[in-house]
Amino acid sequence: MDTVTPYKINVPDEAIEEIKSRVVAFPWHEMPSDGGWEYGTNLDYMKEFCDYWVTKYDWRKQEARINEFANFMTSVDNINIHFIHERGSGPNPKPLIISHGWPGTIVEFLDFIDLLAHPENHGGSVEDAFDVVAPSLPGFGFSGRPPRPYGPRKMAKTFNSLMTQILGYDRYIAQGGDWGGAISSWLGYDHPSSCAAIHINILTMRHKDGPQGTDEITWAKQFEKDQIVQNGYRTQQATKPQTLSYAMMDSPVGVAAWILEKMHGWSDLTHGDIESVYTKDQLLTNIMVYIVTRTFNTASWIYYGRREEGGRILSPEGKRVEVPTGCAVFPRELLAWPPRSYVDRIYNVAQWTEMPRGGHFAAMEEPDLLIQDIRKFARNLNEWPPSG
Image (tube, rainbow, N blue to C red):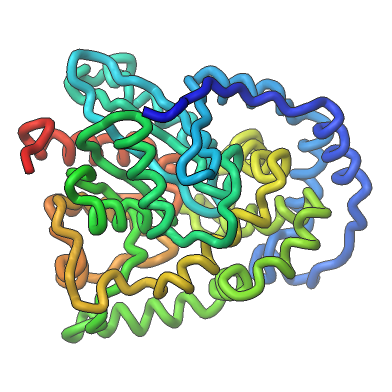
């Protein structure tokens, strides 16, 4: 087993003050007078948000909260990988790796990890406990950068090595949304001897034969229509991420606006109010992780990496993920789920749950719904560790 070193986040005071000074000095500009969030991040909200950032937000408080968990650093294929490792309660917690996406970080899981690892603290049963491994993706947050863009398939290989070679788990479960859903899919597809099952709350993969039948074709047409106004950031980050980075690395307000637009547009909000779901502290802490680690640039590389890996197609031969797969279908997911018939051709679907509410950032938006679904899925795996 390779070296695993305890890690503590401790951002220098000078870095925090430099960020605040840049926020204060931001040259505010204009937006159309009829603009809410239709043109992008709303100017009035952005000014309010930045005022809170410099007058009330306490990074040290949030930093201490992250450090309450057992944080570690290790090296996988010459890349430093940061991860939280919270060992579960009871005699037989199931190993579970949870992967975030973009524009997320491990901050997505700060209210989620204890629910997974210690269910007895939240009215649940210790028999549902997990050993939780929550890594920062390569190039994201406190992890080191890859030498060049890695896509989700390459990251899955890295995370399988983390779970088996570094942490010594013979078998484990993988869970994720956004890029974490793609990484979990590749873990189940490429590494079934160690990844025993996956649970996803997004469908990023596609079948080589495309949609079949009226319902699937209708979904595909609507999906493409819905994505027209969402594709700008994705195209930029998948083709010329370095050009975008020069502006973003220079502007904390720019990074915040780029990320807030997604948090607003991809979440299940009440009356369009982003703070009906998230607090400013939650939003800012996620944003600050990108800024204090200077990883906006390298985090965007994953889009380029996926394009090089072949895009969304899981298998040119039409094969599927054969390990048991749980699907948590949230109604306001940005990437709208196709009919079950389509998903069955890509995954061995063992559990399908249509949620009453929730959007893209399920672990933050609806942690109780997501945790119930993960626990149910894990219980139904029956024996643990599974044979084979």
